[in-house]
Length: 368
Image 1 (cartoon, rainbow, N blue to C red):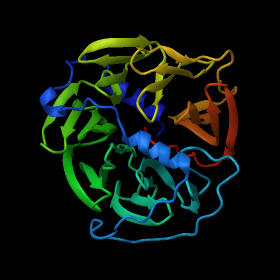
Image 2: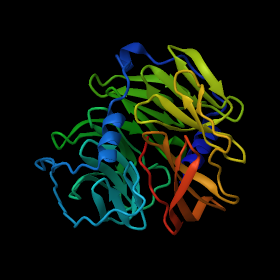
Image 3: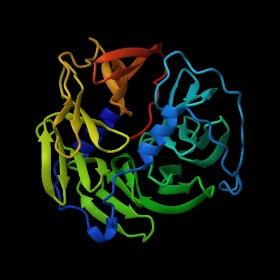
């Protein structure tokens, strides 16, 4: 299920419920600093430095290590990790890996979710370790394959491998152990949960049955922060970026006060949390780079990057130095389908390069 379909699903299921007050301060704690995790990870990826393998002891009781040979990176080298055509592209090279659904960058490597239901840690030198499960290995429409990481490298994913019992699992790659979990009562598709954000020890998610929630992994407290009528898309330095509908569009707020708003949809946030990319709800689709605090347009070239005719946007990732990568596909009866393309652009010049064309499987970009 594409991200756009997910947003529409959650909106339809919860659109009749009013929006509630801002989050409880005692639950989300002191989450008021710029996210350093993305800046550090993006810088490491851009420098293409091979980092040593992390310790493997106690990985949820299973190691299952593999060390495939790294190959030479492609001619078009992106400043972030990505997957396409059965190959996982790392800063130091590329390794074969089938069925990657989602990936998130962490210091020294990645965490990936696969079609087989595995959650794997992949180091920058290509070594892969099984660290958990996100589903039982069969298609389950009510589990959205999402994974997020915070500034210290801890990772959270939604574990549906023991459905109908669902839980969020937090894993610390520094210790190689699960450090926290939170059970979510679910009873079917209408009670699906969608993981939005992981910042300063707080996991944010949307639930069609229970609205938006925030779970503090240190205190265990859970707060209701919204009804799901708007979707939380980013939490940066005390600034919340949400997306409502075609009327309210994207809005940034702090302490419940609106900072700026646009009719555009939210697409992605930069590694340092200082910039966001938005795009219009209807064609022609043009990307606009904005300041995250003011909404001011930063890069607005005469001819901004625009989607090709007949192509539909599936994923977007804003990297460092105003570099934007996105995945497009064709419109199918149940969403976006193959053939897919992966394109990278320099937003300061509007110059774009096609990295992958005609892919049968959807290329994967890092999760915000």
